[in-house]
Figure 1 (cartoon, one colour):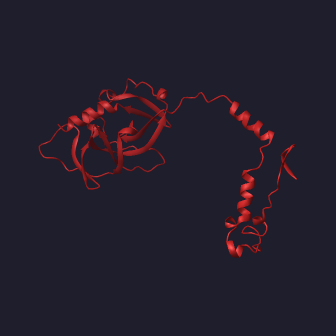
Figure 2 (cartoon, one colour; figure 1 turned 60 degrees about the horizontal axis):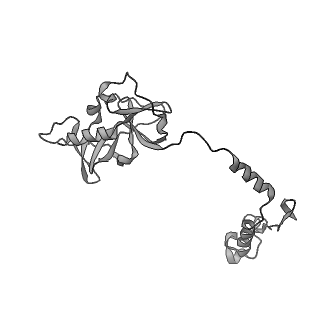
Figure 3 (cartoon, helix red, strand yellow; figure 1 turned 45 degrees about the horizontal axis):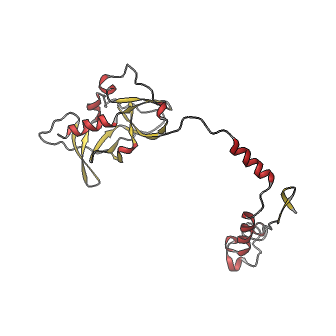
Length: 228
């Protein structure tokens, strides 16, 4: 008789499916009726007995030891952002302001509108969005398209929403969503250009990147200002 502990017997399970069933020699008469062992009452009964087997003291001791371990005191990933690239700069905005990501599209310029950063409007899924060139707002040369080694680059349109208004932001590349501990964000370096620095809440080290975390509130104000 099989046991998991010296004092707790377990009724043995006859794994006929491995001998005469679908993983055996297919000689079981029940296969004509059930086609597959998983449809058979014998297989179902064995599964039920397996779930109802007694729990041995050794098993209990193992899990008790597992739950006695001290909780991980490492920093919790309490924040998330979407990371993208403009020119040579990797930047991020909170995931909460994003609506979707779309393929890059050429904007159509608006007559008599020359607000800083306003590139025109783009059609995404049959809907028009004001297109804002972040490079112009942040003083970034977005013509410097330097890709990361070993990966393809695909320009995208980031659709964001601020105070009920949606905007399309063209970017050179998209890294994706990054979850991080807010305590891991470092102060911006003094060498960052002043146009970009005023929009940063900090810098997030991630893999081989130094990601500038943009102030969503300040940037949202400037996006709305471009439409006035």
